[in-house]
Length: 214
Ligand code: FES
Image (cartoon, rainbow, N blue to C red):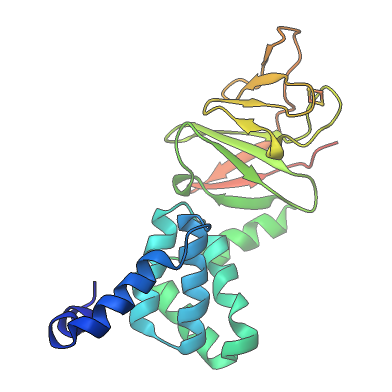
């Protein structure tokens, strides 16, 4: 809680209690990452540096990538205008919360696509990446070990981004095939099929996609 709210809680307890209760109970359906990304949009829109410095690191901690944080800053543009967006970008760059331009340029040079910063993704959990070129599943099995798959089920091409997440396995919702996310192998049924592994490359902690699903 900010010092100002702490002060208000003592100086005007009735008003502060209502305000804090509103903050606590008004948002119930959004997950933590989405809440913090929306907070970034609102903080840029109203031009509060303090709020931006408070919520942008929370978004990163909740699993947002630096690309998503940049998207949130830019989404404020229609309401905030260019100057507030540029001020926010200066603050975010100072806090090392935005993607590196040089790395993005390197990806453009050889047609590789930057997927994100490896350390931003959780360990031993499925991550879905929805992209115009084809949705992907990403699994970070160790600190520097990430494997990326086409999200299309090898059975009948259902999108596994909508599959059931069993932690280290994903289950297709159409015919219930289950895949091990570390190896890509189909475990149930044991039919020798596997998810399609995408070619990737790691540069300075950034993961690049080198091809798109067939
Ligand atoms: S389409 Fe996935 S199991 Fe059939």
